[in-house]
Image 1 (cartoon, rainbow, N blue to C red):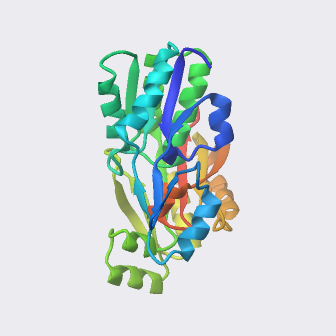
Image 2 (spheres, rainbow, N blue to C red):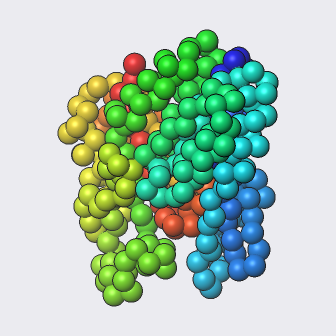
Length: 284
């Protein structure tokens, strides 16, 4: 696939066939149910995970890759004479990015390795990884690819619509009273990610349809009729409104391309079933 290798982690939620087609190396995080540990998107796929999630009496936990996990991949690729660009989940959410940085330092300048904090999550940065692999296949340089990844990161607009506050509460993000109050009133929090890669609340809207309509309004206000690439991530088995959401967004935006993917086990552990993520970038 050329002289530049692209590495990411499993929270990018890139479909396996896409990773294989573009030669993207993926280092998995782990999802732990009780005493049983699974490699994210390898030993536990999204559909099976969400079945286990709703049946589990307690919230599973997640674990980041170790520096040694990244070191093994980096050594293999650099031994093949490749430069490595490694793009990862926001450092505000996980120590995964830091593990990759440590692995790079352990190489002691034995190879050309660039590690990037995407400051995003799920396919919000998965599409940056895919784009980087496509540019690499077209013969772009490391410098050109890194510059384009940073451009995508700056220009992306993103919103998450959380269907239930239960999993935020289970994960200790909000109190039980707030979760119960939100559930009783059918509150749907609209969330986004700031420039430092941290989640922040945008608005709280009553009802799923109103929340989707509000996301469409926010994006239309910001982008107008600029041609855009639209990406959505959904939780499998809970995505009955996915098509309706996409249709509403397409009515408000000048969509040039549309991609849909699934929210994987690690991200789903913290967001819960029924979550929808919307990512938009201006089309070039």
